[in-house]
Length: 498
Image (cartoon, rainbow, N blue to C red; front, side):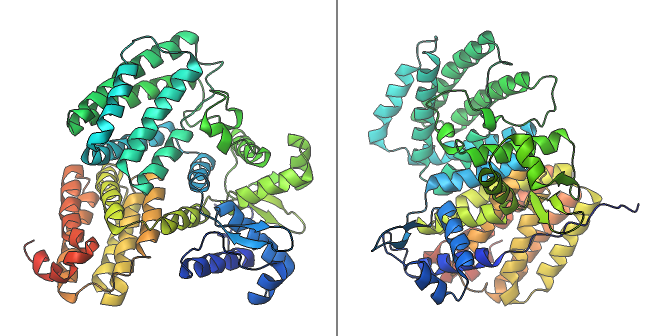
């Protein structure tokens, strides 16, 4: 059907973004020497052959990423920083919030990621930390919760303990991002009775999680963790009763606890305004190609300064939520969210912390197993066609092209899971995998890998969730040694047993 709506093209990277990415690559090549001054504005402008405005915008982007910051003064300049974890968590949480993920997606992803974290924690819980776990268990024995802020602080300490025990930086990032976007403004929709009952249940179940973990019963710990998430989901859904099931998590009105770390992340005026604008888009039911208005109109609507509005619009543009059109009939136009900006920030963080192939594989394996099953449960005719096309490309690829074709198929499976948080995490890991200098796959393993991948695709296309997960498990088992450098030389012989 013809339409008079303007066509919105996928956003092309601006020169400043390209320069920021180049500087980041230069920093990585230098070994990321924290504290080193790369040069002042004129020096950087000359080195990268760009205008003053472009280098300033590139610097702003590096500062948002937590990669570097501009220090003023005679001996100042662009100083290399440690990529802040908070920047990576903010990027993940913001994208998922702006992309308007549903409650179903959120808790489905939390279920998978939090059970994965417990499995990692159970395998790595050191003897000297058992006493700390016991201290938490004792603190939870009283069925009556503490004063609200104190109770929230206790649960946060336990969450952080389990996250840190897992020792996987990718697990920590995803856990924190999913937790932050779950937080809702409890008043006024949640009654005091509902909140108190939730806290009582949370105390009892979290104690059971810890007791199972201390006892070496990881499966039991995961069972109780799912029960704990169900309690939290019940409260969230009760708050949203009578409203759109995809309602915002209320990050613009965080009032749950003054000491909650979420407030520190989302307390910037521009960040809050960006989320308010997204809420406006939802209420107006605008779709890609629709006009939101002009800058003066938005400035008046939200009663903010031009500077705050422009910073907020920049956040939305970076995530491809909006594009700005010039000329007659121009203004701010709704676009399709793209995760590129978010992926870049998170990859920067993981690169700095030397994200090992072992940690990569254990998270990636969990994601692929879960999303292959979900994709089979939700497959569509269009999804089948996409998988068949990508499988054909993989099977015809030469050794140099094979890894790229293989990763494209893996990302497609994650996309078809219907869970956007899981698909986003898969994209991050796929980008991260490109940084490992693993070389080409041996020719004599490409055939068996493609055959295993074909079994996965066939099971997904047939809607056979159990078979899809089983086939993906076999495929991942074949790949596991590829991510263990000490045995990779023996891999061709090992893979023949399959």
